[in-house]
Structure formats: C-alpha cells, structure tokens
Image (cartoon, rainbow, N blue to C red; front, side, top):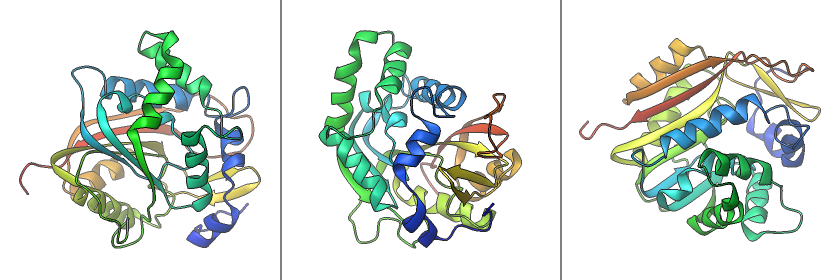
Length: 264
C-alpha cells in the first residue's frame, strides 16, 4: 500500500476522476453515498438556507470532479467560480456544465438536495441554476504562493472546499498556510465553509492509493485560529458505517464555518 506523501505528479499521472466517482459517489456503489453525502448536504442546506449565508461571489476550492456541495449555495449566490488542480477533474466539471452525454451523473445527489429543500419536483431547475451560476472552472494550486496564479480573482463573500486541503499537505504548517492564502481571497467579514475527514492517512481511488494529512479536531481548530479566522461553528461526528474494504482509514467527519475578521 502506497502511503508515503503523494507528490503533485502522482495526482497528475494517477488520479482518475471516473474511478473517484465510482469509488465514492456512484449510486448503489460509492462508499460516500450514504453517511458522508448526508453529512455534507445537510450542513450545506442549513448553512445556505433562508436567513443563512448569502452573497455575490462564491469561490469553490479544489472541487475534484464534483458539484454536489454547491447545490444549496447556488440558490443564494449570484456568481460561482469553481476550481481544481487537475486538468482531468476540470474536464469532468466542464462536461457536466455543458450537459455532455458522458458527463458524470449527479442526479441522485441533486434529488437529495431538492428533498431537503422540500421540493422534489425542482430537480431539473436545480441543475440549471447551478450551471447558470458557475461562470468559471479554474486551475488552482494549494501549494503555490498564489493559488490561482496570474488569474485576476475577485474578493469572495464565501469560499467552500470539500475533501481537498488535506491532500496536498505534508504537515499542519502547510495546512495552516493554505487557510491563510484562502483568507486573502475573502472580503473583510467573508466566510469559509470547509468539510472533510479527520485522522485519515490514506484513501484509494480505484486501485491507486493517495496520502492524506491526518488531523485531529484540536489541530484543525488550532490551524483556523493561527490562520486568523473567527470560528463560527465547528462540528465533528464519528464515522459509523463500515466501508467493507480497506479504502480509507478516516474515523470522523468535520464541518467548519469560519469568518475573516472585518479588521485585522
């Protein structure tokens, strides 16, 4: 089992978005279809529900080939910029936005969000709302001094990220530095909503193994505070479902909603 640090080239050469989708999200097959998906979608629903977060610009950092975590936010933000490090993941995002016939099928997840919102008939409208709101799919690099390079980036009202920041990091310092760089992309008083897993050292995508920075709840809280955020909400729940195969060793899920101070 390859558990040493996965350098960027390993991702570029070995990460297959189709394998990722089928391993974790495909209906009746993906190991994230139940517990993780319910955790993320319910948190996002509550975060972006009426009376919750809203604004003009939302930046999604490190989306992979996925769109599920944006389905609630697209109702309350005017513009969404999504992004990923890998060209193959960005290609899958573009396919879904264009409605290509071979695009990944997120219908089951869209239906779940519509059910949470109390309108199961809204499925196709929900898809089109997200497609209309996403104006760019950019390359991002968490380890670069400027994650979006020379791309001119507007300051965002909110940044989201799911299952991303632990992947490129070797240690807690690197994780904290990424949080600092994300904060620079926020307006004063802007929000960040990040969800991922704790105490995870590896995960499989198909038959390929990738490393993950193992974080505890205390380390997570420390990183956000050292990066200069005000933590609004931090939630951790234990993993209870068995994956059936040794696909990853995480033991819990986390949700963090934090805010950039109005004045620093």
